[in-house]
Length: 125
Image 1 (cartoon, rainbow, N blue to C red):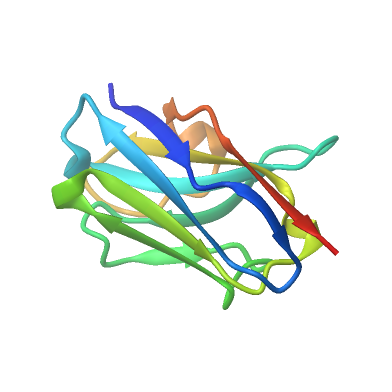
Image 2: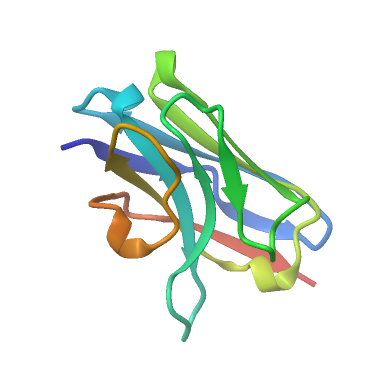
């Protein structure tokens, strides 16, 4: 089982940028597809972005497409989420997730069996 720790959240004004990081340990990181999810107060957790084991495939929720970029550095056991043009509606607790797999992208919470504790992102208007 891989352990995940997110960092990089904070308070930012609308239109600003943040980069979230997720550090993985305890597993062969390159064997895991990775995802970012978020949960706003009073709402269900939702998919944000996904990246394949090797990093060659990515996908995004429509709400963040063109503003967010997911990437990974397998040699450093890290996955990132670069968030630009932030909006107040991006305010949420952001989670990193991992799934042991041979290939593919994954979009649903139950596709992942390893989760971090989350990092808070707050966007002020």
